[in-house]
Structure formats: C-alpha cells, structure tokens
Amino acid sequence: MPSKHIEANLWRKVEKKTVEAVISTKQSIKDTTMLKWLIMIGLKEIKERDIKLFLDNELDDVGRYKRFMEKGIKDTHLEEYEQK
Image 1 (cartoon, rainbow, N blue to C red):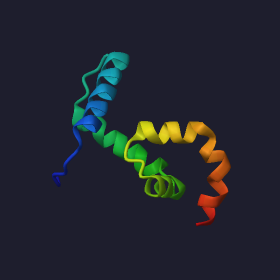
Image 2 (image 1 turned 30 degrees about the horizontal axis):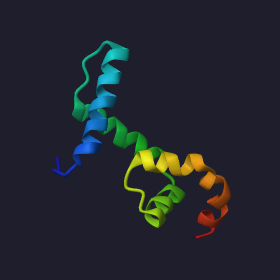
Image 3 (image 1 turned 30 degrees about the vertical axis):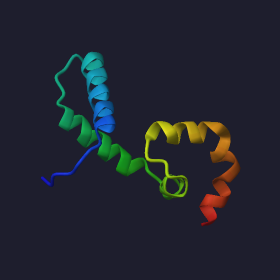
Image 4 (image 1 turned 90 degrees about the vertical axis):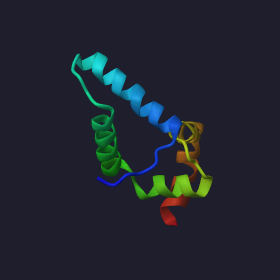
C-alpha cells in the first residue's frame, strides 16, 4: 500500500469518526479501516463542483467547506461553478 502523509488535524477527525463508529456499533474498527471507508465514500460522493469550490476558494478543510456551503454560497454561485 502506498504511504501518504495525512495532516495531524485531519487524522484526528478520522480517529474521532472511528471512536463514534465503535461506540455506535459496539464493534472494533481500526482507524485505517475507517480511513478506507471515508475515502471510498468520498470518491463516490465528490462532485466536480466540490473540487472547483475547494480550488477556487482554497478550502483545505472540510469544516471550512461546510461553513462556506451553509452561508448560501452553494445556492448563489452554483450555476457559475457548474458553467466553468
């Protein structure tokens, strides 16, 4: 398996999600398994407009992306991004 660097703050989010899953399912889940699942879901769910929003707005954090989308930017600029 290729080795890649994951920023510490992002890895903590993976760990937090793993703990939540372990508590809710009452089953043992490895951090690396959770990371694999998150990547698989992300690959399925990410859209071209999401990538453009990250690039155009330098959104390097999912929390910033969510706040960006919650401010209504999605509604007001979606057509603009879809046309690019």
